[in-house]
Picture 1: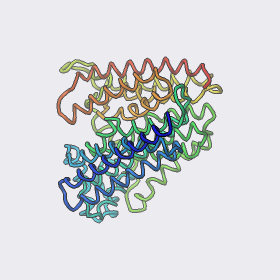
Picture 2: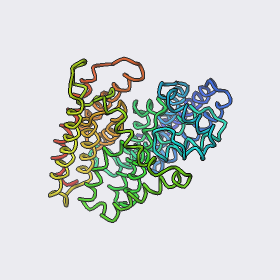
Picture 3: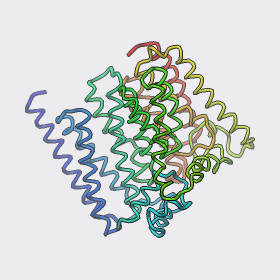
Picture 4: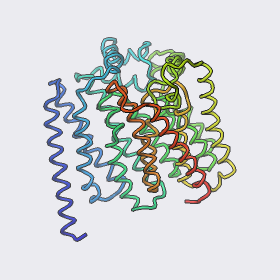
Length: 438
């Protein structure tokens, strides 16, 4: 490309970004809660600047950042469009929790038995209770912040993986933008007001740190992810792979309980009983034990509607199958541990993120979030992985559609078959990657 053509493309990119940014600001002006419009607009502009800055840290190329600006602006514009949408989860749970913290002294309310999220998210609810901002906007913008951090983590992960097509900087920049535009990532926080981006971002950064030989930060980030969301357990077996392959030492793994204790320590200091903190995840695990699947494209979605089954027996079988999958993968990798490359570790991560929720009972519609983002990152290593990312996103997006639109885009069993195909392919690629050095 000639110098003049390059300059023209950069100018067009910058102009497009400016236009989209102005559209974003105009969209914020039409948000329903007038006192909070300025806050939302300022927050989104700052998040745009943060995204551009983090992207530059990843690729160190001003040209790549300029070309990415329209995509970053589009990603934030899409979120601005979503900010006013209210879902049943917000009405039933989040708005009630936010009001409870505001009415009961903010930080003092952390000690009270409210909500079924772990302590770190309660700190956030306590913090926003002091702000004169519409709770819906504050909750969603917090998740959007982690959307940006998630894209950064994905770019770091992609840069740590061996790529066969294109330079590492270009792949990382493309991954950053696509993660921000991934439908389930856009919908999860900005539309649904969920917070899966928090533990997802921490998991991506933790895995990237592990592959980049930063063992302590890797383990601490995994612990922080677990302190936010129980669903981190889907990916935790990959830290056993990191340990086996000597990327993480055993003494590094001891940082996991230490970091978790530090995460919940403020809640304990504020007077929350230890039993309440430790019992949160046990409560979540048993709350929906009567349902084999809650609109998740797990294998239980293949059971014909109305068919009577022994839920307890099928649940035990699914839990056993998930353990067999994890132990089988770890057992197969153990004798090959000294030659495992980063691609093999990443393949194992995809197998766990797809396979564990596919086999476990009681899964919810959002529980393939880690699979969504990991398969997309994996797609930047080899072209043959692209179809796995597409199938995973379609299956996961079908579950989102079922909740957000209250009807099925396609039979959930079809999504389960898609993910089963992804799991089988990922296992085959793992076997091949474990035999080939990076």
